[in-house]
Image (cartoon, rainbow, N blue to C red):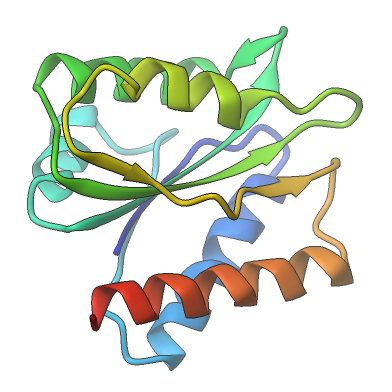
Length: 145
């Protein structure tokens, strides 16, 4: 599972790192990218090597945080397809980044979007960790199917 995240205050990063740790505990190989320090070309290359992709980003000015928005538009332009995709969104008052991220990729072919979207309101709380664990189990089962 490839996990790419963009984080403003570190909370979205925490969620992505928890997911990666849970997947690793389940025996699933992961590759995780912090978009604030990783060029898109490395992430795009990885996205074409993995069947399952997770994108985690905060809602920023009623949109997707800029680095994630750029990555997803690049992936759409590179015609990413035949992938299972999950989202983690964050926002203190109106998290909508998952919906917007999905819209960016919606025209690409044969993408399966995981219904279990993780929504964090500002910081990761206990109930978020439980949902992240559920997503890890769902992804692990799908990867191993």
